[in-house]
Image (cartoon, rainbow, N blue to C red):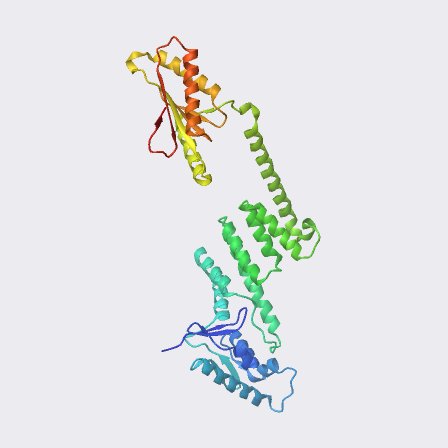
Length: 400
């Protein structure tokens, strides 16, 4: 069965065969790894022997450098073949030159990334470009691996790093067109893992956080960058491009505080406070019950439901008398229940009450007192009242 080989050169050096990491080849042949990387980056172009010698042995003195190179390549091919049969054949010798040709089952991350970067310059749809950017972000796990044996290795590292950042910046600009700030934050976090000192990445992430109204997170990131830069104060610490963003974060924070204080003042305005129990429509009464039920489940507390109703047959009293009676009864309820109790007309002849922090006996006593006060205030009426109280969640009402 043909083996699948993955060669990783971005961030670190690894060779995986069928997904299994192999022994550290760099420890066995550092110059061999340098040669392989150098040839890979030529992308199939032949490299003359003399050029390889200059790159690999610029400061060394050998009686026969060509022979040393040939011996090193032969040994390194044997090491590659020991990892996966035929892998050494990727280093192809030609007339006075060598080149790298990946086999059908050999995959190299840096070559994949370079191909993706090239495809971004070709005509493609927005979706195709975003897909390429996403793959570049995943492939680039860090700067190109270096052993220190290649003369211009740092130049190759810098060039790849710049191309990677250019792709990230372009992707961010593309996402701004659709206000996809959440994705911008994700991309910046990922790219910052590769280059934490890149100020532009931090600026773009902070600006995206501001657009998402994540002001606290944006300020926290701003201060973290400033602290990392070992500067004394956040306003002076950030790059000049971030000064306006910092002021905007402060302004947004001040605006949020102002709004919070305004709403608090409105809620605490004494002119809007009711004395006694809270009267509301029955639809609101049911909503309050739902809220209170959740609170009771969380706190393990109890609340009672009470009702007072006219029990005279409907045909025995007129609607005018009924409404007048209910108005008087509501006034007595208003004057004898506490703040925090919630009251509603549940039906034309029924008043319902939510009574928190009472027991069955105290709840019954409250209703008895209201009935007694009603009969005292309206002694000549032939109205008959009845009341009930039950704990919320109980299976049946308790009659006094």
